[in-house]
Structure formats: C-alpha cells, structure tokens
Length: 320
Length: 282
Image (cartoon, rainbow over all chains, first blue to last red; front, side):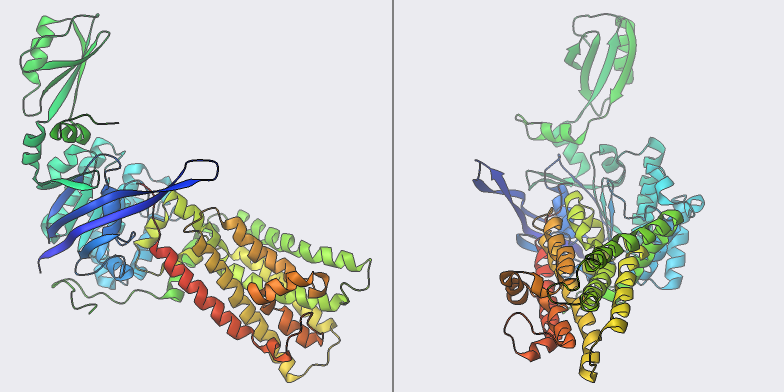
C-alpha cells in the first residue's frame, strides 16, 4: 500500500437555511465538495488549488478529520479520519495559514513542550526534531519569546515546526505563505523542499500563490465548484491555461493603447495601461520597446494568479 | 482492525492521552498563561469570591427582616445554599468555560483543537481554565461549613453520608448540564444564554427551599429537568422536611443514579454534536 491518501467519490453537502419570509425558511443544499477522487502516494508534494469557495478547505478539513464526509470513501494512512480522529491526529501535521495553533501568551517553547506531551513523542526523538526545526527555520532566538510578540513570518515558521515535531506522515498546509514577505516565503519554501527530500514527508498544500506551486510541487490538482478539474503536472496546467503575465505601465499622459509585439493592451485607465504577455516570454524586450517608443514614467510586472490561470483554462464568464 | 493498516516504517505511536491527562495539560497551559498577568489574576480571584458571596449576603439580609423563608430557618436555607453553591462551584471550576464553545464554533478556532490527538471535550472543558474559578467553590464550602455547625439536626450515619454523596452527584448533574448545553451550541452558536439559565439559574433556584416556588416549577425540576436531585431531595431528607411533592423517602438516595443517567445522555449529545460540526468557510 503506497498510496497514503485515498479519496473515492468524496462529497460534502451542507444544509443552508435561507430566510425567505418573515417566518419561513427554505432549506437549501450546498455541495461544497461534489464527488472528488484522487490518490497521493507517499512522499509526493501536491498543490491543491482553486478559487475561493471552490472546496479546497472543505477537502482539507475532511482529510484531517475535522469534518465528516457526506458520501464517498476517504482514507489517510489507512485510517478513516473523522471516525478515528485522535489516531489520525498523531500521524498528520496541520498548518492553518490564517490561524495559529501556538499558545498566544506563552513563550514559543511552551507550545512545543505541550506537543511533546500531547503527542507522546519519545524524548530523544523530540530533541532531535526540535533541534532540526530550530536550526532550519531559524527559531533559536525566538524560543523564549511570547507568541503574541512574534511577527507573522516568525509565527508561521513556529507553526510549521509545531506541526512536525511528531514525525507526521502527511503535512497539510493551508495557505502557508499568506501575508508573508518575500524573504520569509523563500525560507518556508526551502524548508518544505528539504523536508520532502530528506524525510519523504507527503505534503499537500493549498495556496493562492502560484510561485509556491511552481517552486514546490510537481503535481497540481485544480478544484472548482467542488469538482476536480485538473490533476497533473504544473507545466500541463500552464499549457491548458496559457498563463499570461501583466505589465502595468504609467505613461506621462493619456495616450492611445500601446502597440507592442507579443503583447496586447487589456485595460486603459488614464495614463496607466495594462498589457498582457505570455508568461513564458521575457519582459525585457517588451519593456525596452515601450521605453524607446513611449514617454514611460513607471512600470511593474504582475505574475499570473491562480484565479486568472483557472479562469482562462475554463473559458466562459466567471462571477467574482 | 485499527493498527493493522498502519504504514510500514512509520514510528510507533503511543496511545493518545485520555480525558483527565488532556484536561491537566490544557489547564496547566492556561494557568501559566494567566500567571503572565499576576495582578489581574489576583483581582479576578477576589472579584469572583465577592460577586458570588453577594448572593449569600442577599439571603442574610432577608433573614434580618424575617424569621423564616418558606418555613425554613436561616441555618436550613444556608445548608441548601451551601450544597447548591458547592456542587455548582465544583462543576463550574471544572467546565465553566465550556460555554465559550459557541464562539470557537463561530470563528472556526475549534478546528485547531480537532487536529490535536486528544479528546475535544477535555480540551474545550479546560479552555481558558483559571484558578480564579475556585472563588465560588470556596465561598460555597464556607457557607456549607457554617450551616453544618448551626443546624439543629439529629445526625445519623445515613444522613452524614448523604452530604458528600449529594455534593458529588450534584456536581455530576451540573457537569452534564454544562456538556449538554455545549453540545447544543454546535447547532445554535448563541445558545450560551439558554445554557446559563439552567446552570447559573438552576444554582440560584436550588439555594432556596422548594416551598417558596410554585408546585409546577418544583414538578418541572423534579420530573423534567432533574435539578431537584442536586440537593433538594437529599437535603430535605437530612433536614427532616417533607418534599412538596408526594414522593417516597428513598428518592433522597437516587441522585447518583440520576447523575449517571444525565452524564450518559450528555455524552451522547456531545458525540452527535461533534459529528455534525460544520466548521467555517476558510
């Protein structure tokens, strides 16, 4: 049995009550996850992406045992997560980017000591894992600091360490780089890469940051409206979505749309114009061309975001 | 079947900590957290003691005007007050902040507790644990002690045994009410007020003799919502008073059974609640 995570036709249906009159309420069913099947072998690092409300978090919550699936079969390391929740918890690590599991008013180290006792980690193992996390995540100077005084990036690193002290088989990361600065993001990514390479920890991460996926995951799953829309290599996703980057230029004054080879103007707003160009192309010749031909004041390049890639992948209007 | 499917090469996992071990760990963390704010802790302990003692001051003031309340003397009412407050104080010290569960359900922070390898009930029960909660218990014990000295009762072995029995089963009944109320918050997150009516309200009710209440009220807390088993039934036996409802005398000895039944029902409600938990959007 090499598949660590198995989902077969998993569904999650929520009953939503809507007020339709003064006293009347209508019961409506919302299918947050609508029949998802996939397998993740041990040691793989998978990106799980999709727009807001697509069902990503709901899937993660079923995988971790927080939510009970409405239908379908779900196994992680051979366990049924919601029925064997505490046994499951011993074998997984979970990092919620938006909420910390650390103890707010206590020094960082106290949270680790609790994990030591609660996960019943053998002393030697705990020492070894903690030392490793402290070294690689740069936590040595933070162990005595109350968590409330940590910066967002420091806290995220602290949370990741807390999720790894008990040698989990699977690590779930829900938006692990949200709100972090460039340097913190790089640190976190490097750490995850090493972890995956050295310990063969299976990692499943959700993110809005396409760079996370590019740098970490060979395999991507795209979910939308509760269904799995794409499961394969990242390169394939790019082809399917023909992802584009955006060059935003500020000109001296209002001008007709800029003409440049390999790029098209998608939006004009006073002296500011937005040009889309293929993500695979270099921005340099384009910038040189515009600088030579037009009165350029300022410019910036925007990376494609997941929403845009997915939107282009499945043509058709999308409500935001 | 469990364990058989364990992945090869994975380190051995020891069994997860049980209820009581989990409770001690989490409560310990909260005590350490509150010790970070020592002055506020001391003020809360004193405040807790004073606020709850105020209930008794009200009763004492009443007795400065009248000789008896519903036919009961000051010492007898103090005995009811002491048993009710001690039982509730103990339950409250153990589970008092379980009614914050609704807030955790609403903002989704319950998720972080559910991914820990420990019983959620124990984690939620110990949530925001504070030693200042001992204030109410201490106050109840003081009044109870005083009443035992002042009471004019012909003590028998049976009656003497009935006192600790009623404190323990009373605590268990209040604990069951706390847990059932918390379970209800999985569906109605703002139900904390309803729960308070039964916990805090029930405690206050039981501080007075049943004779001051309408018969229907007494029937309600005897047959429907069994608060009368916390102290009224056994305490009236100790005091040698007739129960307002026609019940055989041996009902005074049933509180442990009633408590066990309540705990079983509350435990079931809790399990159903956890399974129907829906979490928040993100």
